[in-house]
Length: 317
Ligand code: XMP
Image (cartoon, rainbow, N blue to C red; front, side, top):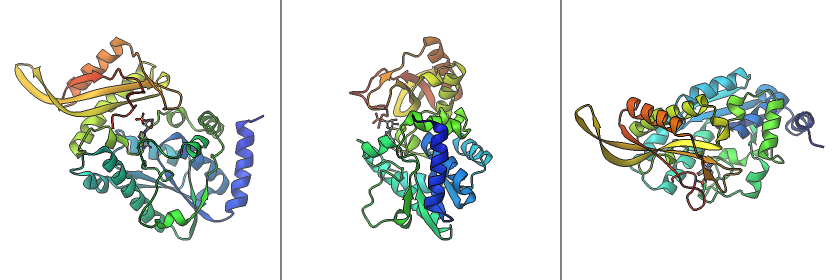
């Protein structure tokens, strides 16, 4: 029967036999799959694995710094690429969700291609593809920013001509987590909620601006920190804050305010295909709402999303 220790052992041997002394490039996202794939490959081929972690400017607050730090602790040969301005520049003035997704996907490909060219003689592209990705390879909402679901139209970027190594492609999510545990990865990475490739870019309804990203990052951090503090984070399948381009009237002291709304979303799900909204305790919601309204400038109202999927989707875009 399947054990994570045996899987790790045979997979490391397989990778060594397949890849030999070649160089491999891998895009890290901060998510469970790419992290487990990276640590596994690193065990097999050491610094011949070149990891690239792109800051698209649409990550959670402090995510880039803290995730990069964790990976470095693992001894990974990793390069962080600050491409915030490139992504946010290309998104300026764009409102349509699918167009935003396409732009984020395209810029990611450009940045990754440029970075992989800087590695001499790279022969392989490693991906954290897992079994469910293969059976549902096309997202209902179109291409994501991950490489695996990208269908390039205008000629392949060079890294897509590389040979592909996908050490997790026979595994289900729970097996990936068990392998991660066997490799010594911490819950900081293994227990994280799913996060979409286009990141906060699809949690800001309509046009994305650096100001809105900053506001959403602050609100989202208060939300997630409170879920963790209340011991609810692990019971929730996915949670996040959404910036609504709607302004409503409020009062602050004797001043009238006219500011934006933050929506909070938390769902229970097994695979993201169907989902129920979480019945979070009122005292926790009250604390989150107060903290967001008091601390995040530009927000004077917080609402909680009580829609299940279907017919509502998990993301608002
Ligand atoms: P929906 O909103 O369709 O989301 O109910 C289901 C799951 O998919 C994630 N999601 C995405 N992931 N690129 C991604 O990598 C995308 O464009 C994308 N859109 C949605 C969503 O976060 C949820 O986990």
